[in-house]
Image (cartoon, rainbow, N blue to C red; front, side, top):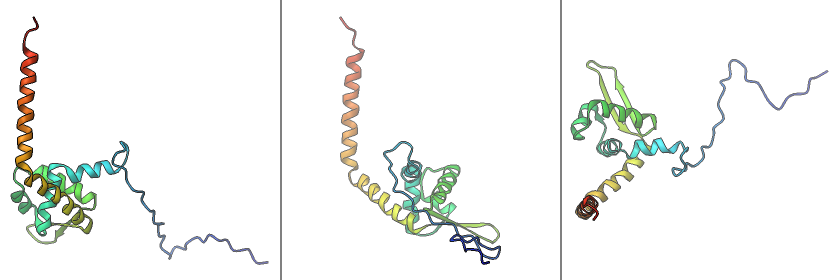
Length: 154
């Protein structure tokens, strides 16, 4: 008597198990528990923005990036590159040579993000005079408020 065949098949040892692709949900950065928040932080913090912009020009070595991005420490650059690599924005390529040679380049996703943060950085640079005026006005009004608060009450 023949056994009925099951609709589920169990892979044999020779067949690789292929995971079912999961369609990720769209993130919601306004939600406090959304996993997009750390990624937003990695992409938009000072060093993340500068690394992305620096890599838009070309693949670079660590020392080239450090020279290009004024003020970044080795530790912070290394940490930033690791985060951007983890998020799929930067590809780290280690070459099997002596002395060790490691290149960093943008992935297609990283290039897309870099173009967006470069637009923001360009906007800041173009509007710097207006922003500086606003900061000066705010500082002056803050000093006046503080002076009024410091006056003794009669």
